[in-house]
Structures are given as structure tokens and as C-alpha cells.
Image 1 (cartoon, rainbow, N blue to C red):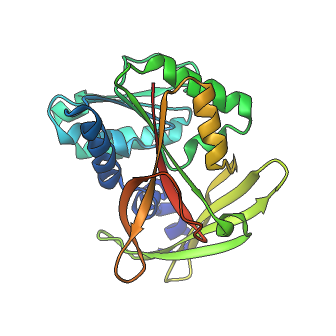
Image 2 (image 1 turned 60 degrees about the vertical axis):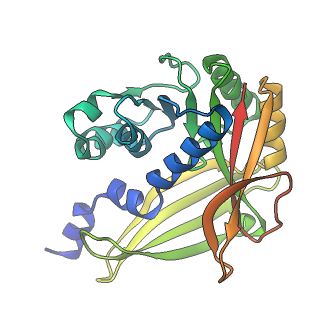
Image 3 (image 1 turned 180 degrees about the vertical axis):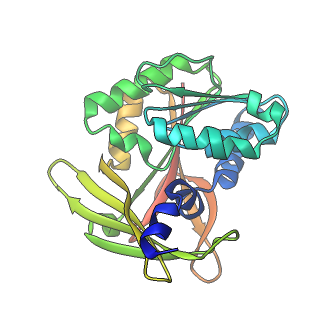
Length: 271
């Protein structure tokens, strides 16, 4: 197979799933905070901007009465989810996932107990008006015991242009380098253009496998908009550190964040 043929053959959605997503950890987190708040597990989850719906798939694996709805505008990503991600489920589990090609600002679904918008996906909404409208829509959809869960990142590193590479182990194929490129940033509007590249040991690559034009929202802006949308309680969760000063993957509620060069946080909002 030629280098060009190898580049075409590689599955960008599968590579993204390996390099970026961690549905097990994400569902562990939302399960934990919901149970701590209400003393019981949630049953109905909606994944907004769901892409390949990997989180939906993990949700229905957890319990036999869990149901998930995934919403996204991208038919290609949803198609991959149906033919690949959901094929890892058994027949009963697949029957409890519904994928909808639609707009999160107008979609109608059964009432979810948890709404997720992860991987900074809601940053595709560039303006205060658009993000407030989304938060208001979710607030109207949730029951009083519901949660909206978001993630965010920041720190000085998030403003610097350039590339960051990380080695990814592929258990079913060849290892590769995941490269995150921050290509442009406008300090006035907060908008950024970023790309994901995948590069392989044989010299081949998938350049700009994914590209993003989004706004780098700050935590105070997000909190203010959640408050304006009518959420009554907003909580931030910060990642801890292990004995080697590496992120430990465990997020705990905080009132004050740490001014790290680069940080990731979760946000929960309750009606």
C-alpha cells in the first residue's frame, strides 16, 4: 500500500476517539456528581454536540435501564457513530440510544436528567446571545433535579500559537502522534482557529483531520451566562495532581482555581 493509500485508509474518527475522548472517565464523573447530589443514579442522558456518540454508548452500557439521546448537526460523524461506535453495543443497548441530526437550540427530546456538552463543543457558539440561548434552552428542558455538565480549558498556554504533540498507543493498529495546533487567536473577540493532525512513524499523516473555529470562553463568562439563563447553582471542578506533579484525572469541587499554565475544568449547573 502506498503512503497516499494509507492516508486515505486511516479512519479519522477512530483516531480522534483514541486521542481525545475518554467516555469511561466522563461517565464516571457525571454518575458520581449526580449520585452525590440526589442519592440515586440518573437514567436519561442527552449528549449535545455528540459527534460519534461515544459517550451515549458508554452511558447505556452502565445500567440496563439507562437511555441516551445524542444530538449533532454533522451527518458524517453521526454516521460513523451508527456504524462503528454503536456496533460495540449489544442489541438491547443499541435500542436505548437515539441519535438525532439536529440543532441543539431547537431539538425536542424526552426530558433528560443530565445534558452533556463536552470536548469544548459548545464553544462553536461564538456570541453571548447564542450561548445564552443554548443555556436557556437546556434550562427549560431539564427537570428540577437535572444537571448540565460542561468542560472548559484555559491558562496562558491556551493563548499561544503553535503545536502540541502527544504520543498515542493504538492497541489495534500502529501508534501515532496526535498534534494539536493553535493556528490563530484574536484577543478582541476571543475566537480561535485550531486543527488536529495525526502523524505516523512511516512519514504519512492526516493533516487538519479536524478543524475548529470557536471562541475561547472564560469561566467567569460561562458562569455569568449560566446565571442569566436561570440556573440556580453553578459548581466548578478542578483536577488534582499526583506525586509526580502530573494531572491525576480526578476532579473535585472548588471555589477557587489554580493559575496553571494549562488547566481543564468541569462545570455543573442545576436548575
